[in-house]
Length: 177
Image (cartoon, rainbow, N blue to C red; front, side, top):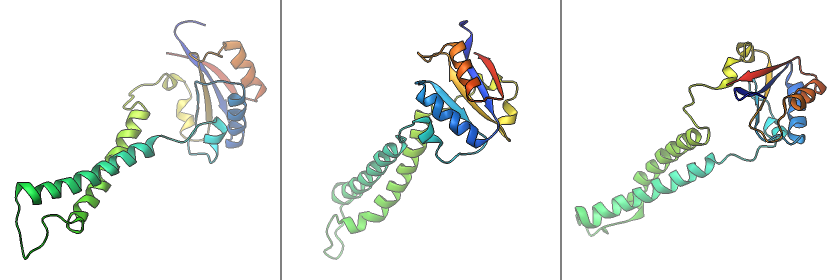
């Protein structure tokens, strides 16, 4: 294996074939691999052994931050910054602060979701070695790929190639960095 090798790519013709192959690659113990498809395939996350995304945690943190900032902002403005007693109403009431807090909750939840997705997916990534695959444009239409990376501790070119051959890959190619 040369230092310039990114991994091995196998091409499959159907969603069922790539789903079965993904289960087998997962069961073979590979950790650094991916499936590239032209459309989402229901159940692929389970077939790959992926755990639930962490993006909802970013969303929750953004939402709690937005709600808290809204309440604290209205409280500070009414109680200290510009206290204005009108008709004996209290200086702060959650009822008055709710619309601002609600909108900030939605806004910062959205920012948290987008930020979490960018962070966890390591975006923006302007280049990936899979783009060097000569038939990558077919994957946007009707073909399916599994890529096993050379950095995987279990990866050997011969071992991965034999696994893909056993799984019925239509084509197996080396990928370079």
